[in-house]
Length: 398
Ligand SMILES: [Zn+2]
Image (tube, rainbow, N blue to C red; front, side, top):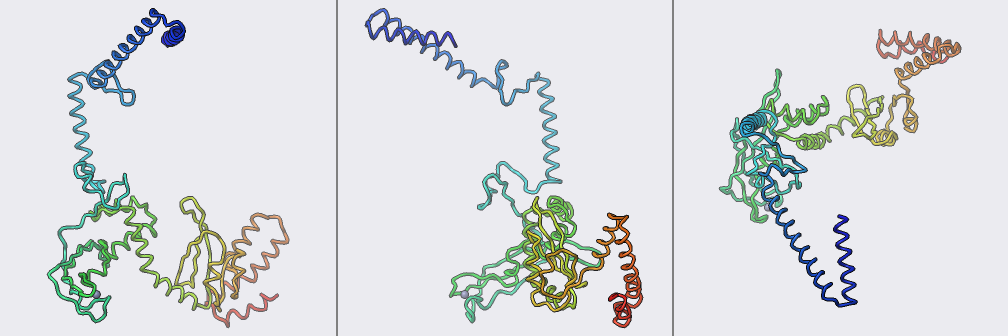
């Protein structure tokens, strides 16, 4: 490199000298230098081109990023055999166990869904060819958009397949039902309309029972999405994705909005309501789950903070008794309040463990016990009867 730089510097010096002197000797020296330079570059270029073309076969050339795996001819045969076995084993494994969407490089391009993200393998829903039951549904007669408009019968057939789970006393089984019916044509809309018996599925392949089962796996049993997909594949031979389960949960949440409203109405009609909250972690962020119950009906709510504004809103105008722990947030609720006895006993008990030598506290707790134990004994014996509880009033006041 230093040598090159010397020549290169010398050439500049010759050039400057020549410009001053216009000497023929210097001019020839510069031309010779440039010619030699060009021919050296030519040799280098042709050698690099040769290496590029023959790199895979030349033993004296290797690749920096993926070094060649060299072997003898007999060794290569062994490699080929073993790799073929590995490939076939892998293909079989995919077919039997984990193949959610089979990859076929020839069909890869044609499989891409129109709305799929770039670089995401598109998910192809496989609609069963054979249905266990075929149900014929009536064609629509009146247009829903244009009331009174009688629609024309057409030859166009509509079909929709539903995969569902049917629950019985002893278990559940998968069903595949195909709904078939004629479409009708509305002259005013200028379009075909699906039979109501097909339209009600909103294009969903999985029925309510199936979706409810998946949501139960996720929410009640807290199974991971991947485990649920695997169970669906192994037990029912169906391919679903994490996104399917998320959609099922959204669907069911919408479906049960009315049920939740009814539950809340029942709770608010009760003479007392228990409310408690607990912290949970959702994807690394703290959230709070609130539970409201009258002992029979239960409603859960999720908030991002521990502010009791949600509970204040729900209990607005409530005339009964709110039973809570000692969290200050509940004090802002306008209704009558009672602190939960279980929380109180637990807090008092914990304080005694923490201050074992506080004699004043101990004697206070002893008096508290003497009031409480007979009341609890009576509740156990007679239930929450006024006549049996009223006799404790004097003791409580004291
Ligand atoms: Zn119409």
